[in-house]
Length: 319
Image (cartoon, rainbow, N blue to C red; front, top):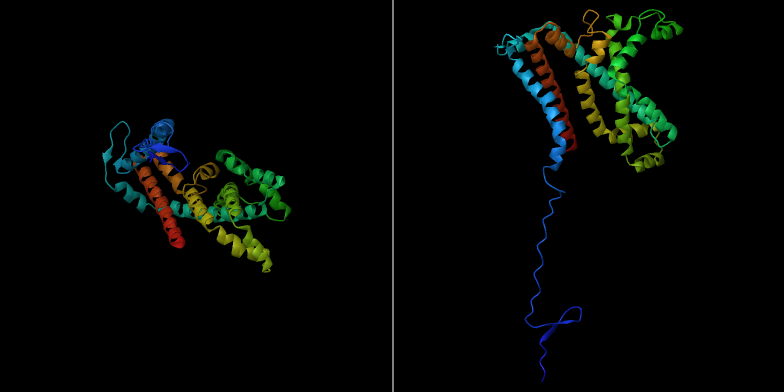
């Protein structure tokens, strides 16, 4: 009787008894990185160094200066919370904060409403619409100094000024615009809306692209009008976009400076004085750097609180 010393394998071949297959080689752990871990940081290092040097170090320096009586070349003196007490008790600062809030609310509401209207009008894939969107977005890419100078010329208070000429065609008298304390605030707000609405429009267009088209088709089947589609489909679908834009626009409004500085410089008679222009005047024109730093820190804290408040509300709604 012959004894078979081989065992059949699954593919029909045989191997000798006692033969052990070689152990599989250990696989190299995939770390998900190509090269060394520090390679991305090496490329980011120049930008990070500049960001730290021009952003974080000045911020920390401003916080320290807000507790000091800054005297260049003579040595700073520690005064505790005296600068904050002065800022919080100064009526000019109270008026500037109120003007800042009014401008922030006006520009935020106006730019979001106009941006949404432009997005609804320019939604689509037509080449003509792409050209119109590009043209409407131009105010965002134009430097704010150029925008302010353009509107300052348009706001010329004489009868032959551009906007006053248009008002004369409809029988309205000439307006002082930025030279009149009664209309200077709304003039600054209109300039901010004109520049901020195209930016909001692009974000709204991105949000509209993410809304399910089937919801519109179902609303059409149910006989819903265009306004009902906007009210019950579009606006709920843009809820997260609204929260993001609100934070961005509110921060942009609270930090308004360049257009006010170039259009009115806080005038006439302080009617458009905002927090940033007042801080600039306190710090760089009156050489009260400690007081100006305290105002800047308070404005930063207000912006931070507003951002956190909106985020908390948003998370509670999503929960």
